Image (cartoon, rainbow, N blue to C red; front, side):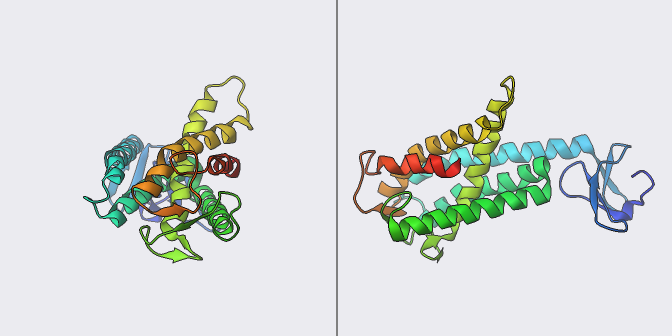
Length: 231
């Protein structure tokens, strides 16, 4: 792509350039190691990578810092807590996912997560299957079919983080297994839910379990079904 004028190249957020030629656009990296952002403005691929990497670490650091806020619902606006807990992992997933799998790849991932998560939550609300009998309060904001929009988006952020961690774990195995990655990701999601569900039910009051449960008021079957659903 060395011969493509700078004005025909725009950035997708990594050290790749989108060439607007005849036919469908494709992603490529310029052989001179430079990326044209606007006419006359260029950044090196390594500079873009470093900036993006630092931004991703910052997102994770802020997310870790706001996690304890959920235990103090009387001191913090709950909608702000919910938003930070959902939107920070979501943003991480969109940026990292676009870098790793491309814009189309992460778009498909988002669509699958939102669709599957929303369907399972809706089924549970109306039938008790697969997660159990519960209902959502107004803490998480607007709802669609009684399911909070932010909860559907939470499946994207945490689902992607679980997948990324599983990819690191399974990547160290010899030989790699296509079955191991989703299984490890599902276990990570269950671990996250074990730490999350009881707090959001008992402290944040984002949802209420109708019959309670053995794990701090949460039914054990919920965690089993969470794991199976994410596989």
